[in-house]
Length: 392
Image (tube, rainbow, N blue to C red; front, top):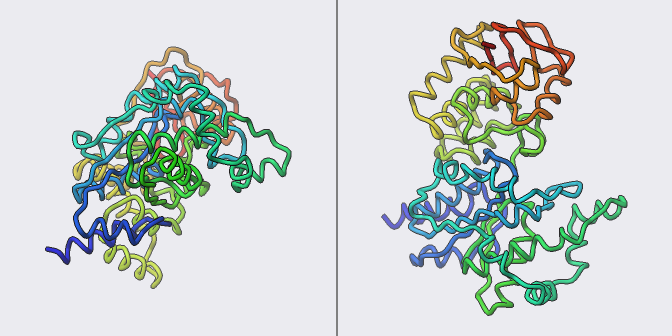
């Protein structure tokens, strides 16, 4: 039993982990069975949680299965400020209304991975909204401007003469203060969050708390091989249907198969290593992409849904058939942008326009080259290779 527990701890500290600060101390605490408070914050900057954001959520699940307390902070306040840790330009401020709308289903989405009933769910507007200027000034005094400006993405922007707002300096303070309120023993985040996570350590020291350990997870590429980001629309979302998940996985670059297995699933690492060797030896990567698509669809939906999604892909894409069953909608208007948005295959009309301009939309198998195109009743609209809509 102890051997099995130690193996779980070893994988907890290594699988999908880029860096652990105070690793030896953390490992010791885990092995003696000390229960720790594990913090993760997520800003509702879009309505969807995608597989990139699911990587730290899966790590939270690993901690949870070992009996540790998960502190899930929904950044309804920090989401308004906007974190530019991974951005090459200033992130525009969202309104409170936008953030409130975005986070409507965040708990239900996180519940696909975590046992929410055992989590401590917090909204950081509860404490950040109460801070006054004096308190914020005291917090800001802990850090120097040089520390902020030396961050790689901020330095690049400054060197290029791009604007960096004073608002952006406030974000790490806000995230760091979250750690104080949560009394976090460890905080998890992507590699792009390293500065913010370290800020939490310093903030805890200022408030006479023991500084949190830090665990960073690697970022993952999306459907276009850039970092998965809702801003770019290259995501696989937790609320995607099983068919959508499977189809999107099948469109990934072959070189991402093993990375996705390691980071976005909990298939045994020995099995993944076997897949890796077989692909290297000349096996068809498509077969392993099918296994990956099946596992993702099964995890977020069910075995039955995954089987249906696999069969759907084979019938529609491998055999190049139009599906017998497809989404049918009666749109409020018949222009192509409205149809794409109201069907749900595009989040916004701007996203729909981008897809049309990239020649990714067909009506009755003919490519649409004008975003002002008007469809007719009974037209079959296809977005990319996976999405079919029948207009009523």
